[in-house]
Image (tube, rainbow, N blue to C red; front, side, top):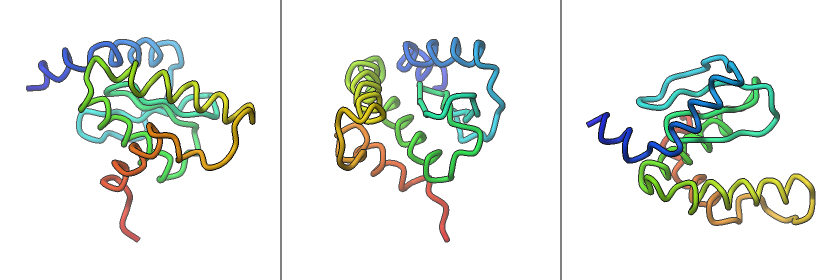
Length: 123
């Protein structure tokens, strides 16, 4: 089954693997097929089996990124076009303050946030 998932998510897994090699992030946690790494940037990104978050990312940021990994599982090779690129553009415009409002109002982020509920720790 894992090999089928690899081929289904291969575009983002390969990209995540390349980023992993170049950033030399530190493994923070394992969640099933997904590995969460810290990296030197202040932003986060999820690519198939790889999540990259800032070193001191909160549990809610990690859960949100894990929500994106579920999107990757659902969409397979369409993930980068349907979620990855639009999410990157949205985050960039938001960071540059070209757009304002609620970051989680964008469809990719709202969906990932809903999916992240599966990963949030019970208080």
